Every structure is written in C-alpha cells, then in structure tokens.
Length: 191
Image (cartoon, rainbow, N blue to C red; front, side):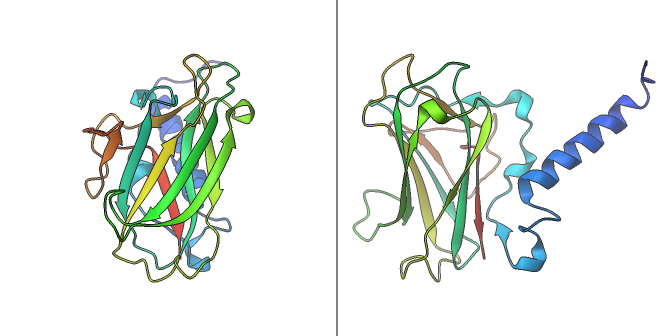
C-alpha cells in the first residue's frame, strides 16, 4: 500500500504525539489526576538529532542539575544506549538535593546500581526514588543527577543521551567537570 505524500506529515505528527503521551505518562497512572507531574521540558527533544554523552567509563562522571517543581520526587528517567553491544560496566546513578557536589549541605536522596549488561539499546530507564525524610519539601530546590562507573572500561561501557541544544535552561550538564551547552536527556517525576 502506498501512502499519499500529503498524509505523511500528519502520520508523523500523530506518531510524535503518541510517543510524547507515553513518555509523559498522559492517560495512564502518571496522569494529572494522580498529582504526578514531570519536572522539566524534555518532551521537546527530537530523538533523531540527540547525541551520546560518551562511554561511562571509570574516568567519566556526568552531572545534570535541575530545579524541582514537586515536593516529593518519585522517579528519575534516563535515556540510555548500549552502542548495540553487550557491556560489562556497573553504572551508579545518584540523586542529590543541592545543585553542586561541592556544597557542604548537599544530601544524597537516592542511589541506584545498573548492570549495563541488562540495558537495552536506546531505552528509557525508570528509577524509583525511595520515600524518606530528605525527599520532602523540594519545590523550588536545586537537585542534581550524577552518573558514573567504578569499573567501566572503553568499549565495554554504555552511554546516555544528551540533547542537541540547551532545552532546559534552568539546569546544566557537566561531563567530567566541563559544563556543556546541551542537557542530559532526563525526566523527573514527582508530586
């Protein structure tokens, strides 16, 4: 069956809307009715023009800060990639309350360990943030996501996607201490 060329942009728009709905939880358990909202505007990302941050080896640390618009954080979503290979690196993801690891009052809210051999290429990884006394009253507060690997080696480590442009002006992406113009592809779900 051949498609009318005039209908292709409409089909692309419908597909993009469906993908956006899935990513933002519209119509499901993450709908506005449940009080859950997304922290940022990453839904603007065009997946065809994003870039990997590079392999997460033991020499690389990736950070992304953001301002919470929710009192309690529920999930962190990251967009990971395997370079279409099986990797062996252990990935550590940490979530902090505080915008810089150099600040004395920065507190860790959560830490996750990801076995990169179980990662699927170009997939969204959803990490649940545990309830705690620290994970409260975060609206307007600076928070930080940190991604690193204690044992990652070249050609055996995965990556995470970043945007082509600065789509989240309230936060900054850092790769091994160097601030980038781009942003990490991330979503934070809270209520």
